[in-house]
View 1: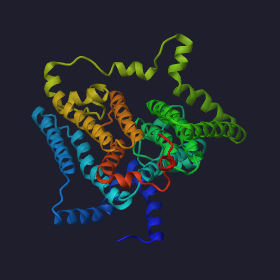
View 2: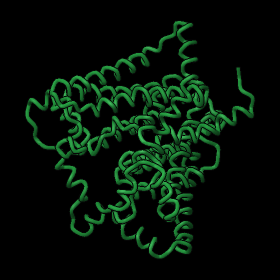
View 3: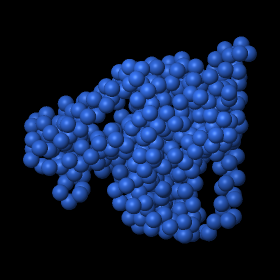
View 4: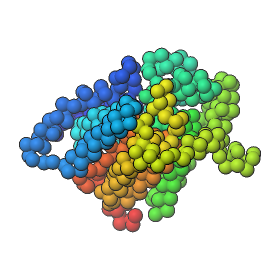
Length: 440
């Protein structure tokens, strides 16, 4: 039964704040995140959907396989600490969050907010939550009152990072304000580039979304700059025809105009010390690699220099069976390494690590194949897959409770939705181009 127009609009409106709280999993109190609360409230809808599917004897094999796979990884992440006698079950906790919170919550979100919705609706929601997060980051940067309020009422590493990094990092309303956060913001930039080709709506919002996310990526983590590069790479699609070229030109002009007007406006209203802090700390931090090339001819940063040291020789026993440690007894990363690939091998060896990586690779490839009729988004899925694997070299990504939510929401939406639901869109520019006989 279809909801009335007014009720449907309310549900569509609620999709954004619910997605924000679900993805960013804010901790206002210890041990319980907004993502857990959101999932618990949405659970009855999922139970009803599963009950109906059971009555009709409908079992999604891919979903059943996904459940079995995660449960198997939970078993392995319990077995290896017991085998080695380390009692380090921290990685098991991450897999349990993936199962109970991320997978179940993503299914709930699909059934309530995404069923029978277009792909552009989902992409628009993701872009909006990145814009909202970026607005919060900028407000925390310029307003001590807002910054202190969020630091005092949420649980994260933000305040410690703020004090450590000259007062220019640690901002954001999220459980993790480094590494995970800039990657999510850059995904918003990638989807902004996609949206200018598939929506009839004004593209100025997506110009604004791109530039504000870019600024906040500079403040939160340089890993996100790789995603920013991918978003610009997608603009090559503009050369397909005059319509896409015109919209890309408008998109880039919008970015330039918003950036220029914001620059002069902020110079006029912001205190001089804030402007100086941004210039001397944020800009230098974000573009340290290019500054170093210009000054010394060396292509690298202080963090990349340290990162190379995070990968080191290990014994054959550790390579095949791991050491059963993901965290050290003092709460630091085991053997002091941040590298995602290294941490997994150190914990349970190469074979469980390969199971995890092949599963993600298969997931990205399967999504790209499933949605191959939208060639541009299929390319985006493959680019995001490559982005995930590259970023994992720097830090733990495949068990990130924030980033995996983006992955699972896309996966579930693409595999559950019918082609007509994904492609038919009242705002589809590509549909209009095709109807008018313009080759795309």
